[in-house]
Image (cartoon, rainbow, N blue to C red; front, side, top):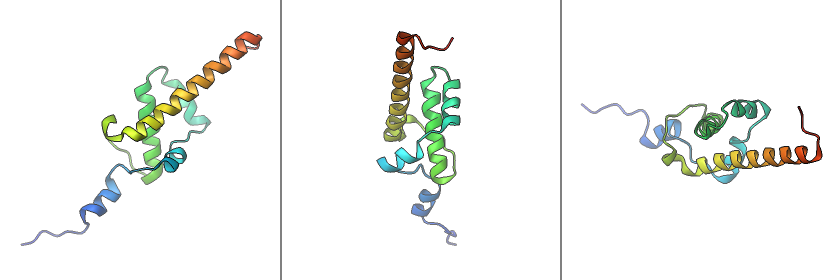
Length: 107
């Protein structure tokens, strides 16, 4: 007896596989609001947790599903997330240095 097939493999992948994103989708789906940034800052210097948070958030926004994955499988998205974290940290560091040198740093 033949096995019942409701969905094809392509349909299953479309529903449950990690989405393949282009640069425009990444910039939209991995964008962070103030609440997300506050959550990232609570992770201190744990970059892996920050990247995982951004990736899970973006993938959830794309297809409303959370994933178990290795960073090797999502290299392009990981680079996008790491770039965001790096640029944000660089911006904050420069802003803090400017505040310190001008004497306007919060105490």
